[in-house]
Image (cartoon, rainbow, N blue to C red; front, side, top):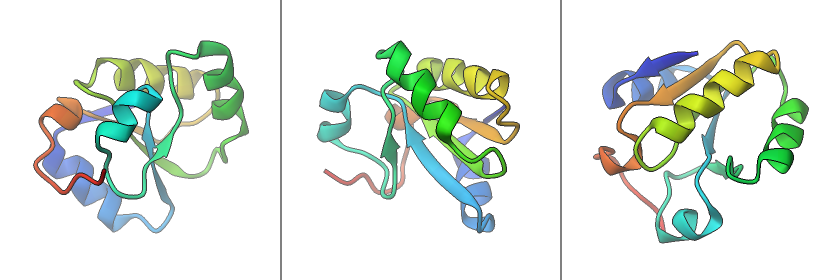
Length: 103
């Protein structure tokens, strides 16, 4: 698990051909706006979150965000415990994201 600022997070995402974006916010937050290509896995639904995390391919690189970076940091830690080594948290979350947001 690694905490990355927006620049490093975006650069890593662009450089990887084996990356996936994970949004760990609620469906309501996701519907307000999300980073293009993001897959929603709501961390607040803890049972379902762990089920979905355990089914993810372990060899991919996961770029994870939430609103402010706190939930996504916790998500990255849980992903590490589930055997996913390449989980990258967006520091500051979507609040600090200056890139495009889809709605």
